[in-house]
Image (cartoon, rainbow, N blue to C red; front, top):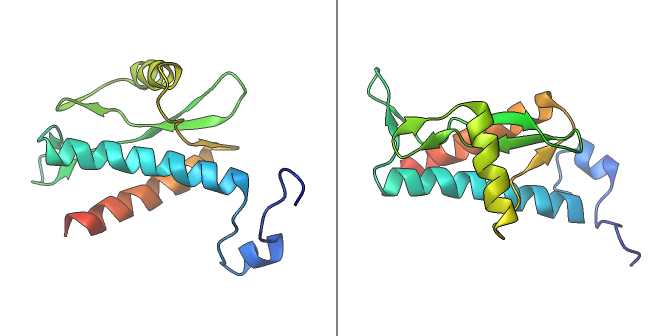
Length: 127
């Protein structure tokens, strides 16, 4: 199979079927990294306690990288919420140090949709 060709099609994606392309695999790996960050914060007691009694483990935000893509990064570190610029700095530093890449999207709308999916999956795992 030629490089960059996936196993699915746009028609399958439109019908809600998973499409397995290199880009999709990379994005899922990045989203798993955000989810793992939240689960680690929860497990180690580093989440933020909200006024309503719930906890926040990630509070992701999207920031633009050098290529113009929206990068989804967590803003919760050690029971504190950091600024978007600090979250971006930490994310890029961890990537440069050899960590897995954070997920990137073509638009803020797609990054927000991914953030909601990740949040939903973390909530399901808490139960």
